[in-house]
Image (tube, rainbow, N blue to C red; front, side, top):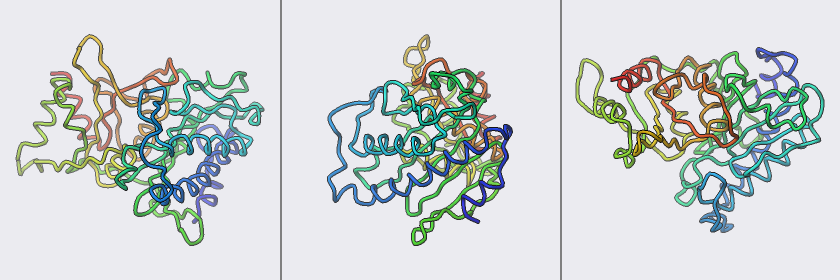
Length: 328
């Protein structure tokens, strides 16, 4: 079954928006083919390295970050269903008058997640979230408020194979790109995260800045105990899409906790609207769990377009145990 055929069967929790959501997901899927091709030639075309500039979040920008941001904007405009685009690479949302009407949507997107991996040929991804615009002008503020109000979310993983995973609130489904045909084919229907895993993913170089409970939890995972399946194996690539995808398939937990150097001013790194919230939605729809350490990610409210949040995501038992360490 192709992605288009699968989407034709979807309704989602808000059927009146289904047509717009489907158009947007297909636009992103089509755009991802171009991104995959561009990534394959990035080194040959001199598109690795940095531009010398930084995005609004303070990350070094690469030529492909900017190219993908602009290409995604064009794709969303052509869908005629997107009325605003919130991107990691733009300080302010981009309003799109092409997507007018009461059933238009707002898309929040990280066009190239993990772009620091580009210079070494590592996996990268695209993360997206779709919300109702509600017919408002400007449309972008409709993305603020409760992050549980997502119509759809998903990601594309560019690696040995190109995979697209999405949810519209009725399960999480994965598709693999047939490069010869240029079609995404259903390969992972109704994905289910194992209740408990054997791996964890985290940047241990930041261990000095973690919450004490976070440090204690990681030490617990590293401590051998055959009866409980420990030690866990560390798996961390530096690209959230790749690490979360592995976790959804194999179980375990991926963590990007806040910097607690100053306990009175926690500093999370990942962005809520276009990284943390969409991945949380995808994981929950696959039977997993996503937490900030102190509560469910999807209970958060977005007050700013580039707001940051911590995330612990993966198997229910592993995330629940991690939370318990934050309470001690």
